Image (tube, rainbow, N blue to C red; front, side, top):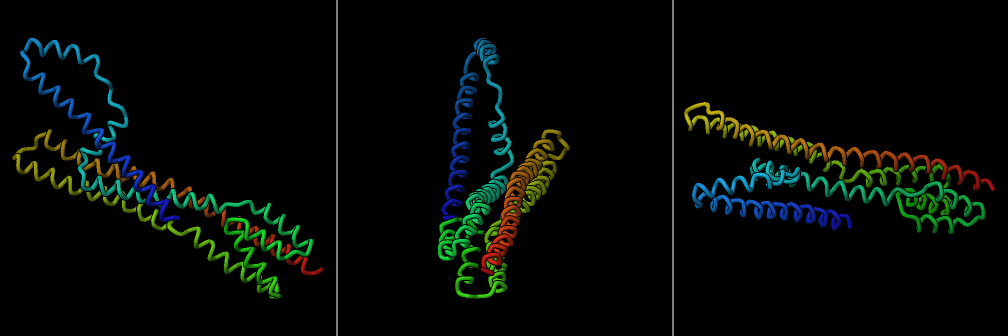
Length: 271
């Protein structure tokens, strides 16, 4: 299920990106045709066309500006940065969905377990935990199984600690890949900048002079990869911190709920 969600997310992002590029190409083609037509007309008609079209030109939107800068940066490193961003976001969205489903109401579960234990219905308390989603309920299930088998409270507590560590590991699964994407995105951006600078100096050497046009164009292409790499890293860092905060919240809730669970077992074990 997790792999399916991640795959669907990647496919959706890549489909959106491809459709945006096609839309950009379709927009540029009519502009080129219009330019050719203006060149072929006489000089008098050119003045009329320019005066008519200049007031009606629509301002460039932010989305179109981003697409143009992305295309100007070159498909090699800009494409790699985009793939890293999509992969990191797919993993992040899958983790957010998983953690949201794992975050249950532990207080309500503890109240139900206490009511069952007060009535002496250990099997009912175990079934209640099985019917409840989340790592807290699965940990309580293991503890009740051992309690029902006649093990001591110390052994039950050890099982809670062991299964709690396993549950915490599942919560943190995939988080390291998001951190890797955060590191790789600016690295590839910097690499694109270095290669772009090398190409700019090659162009200067081929031209034989320090033309501002040659230098500016090479510098622009070189720096665009760094900008987009940093943007990708910033976006993924926000997702990373949000996921880490949810993991910390769920882990803290697991620890507090385990202490309350052991208090319930101690309380009704004396009867």
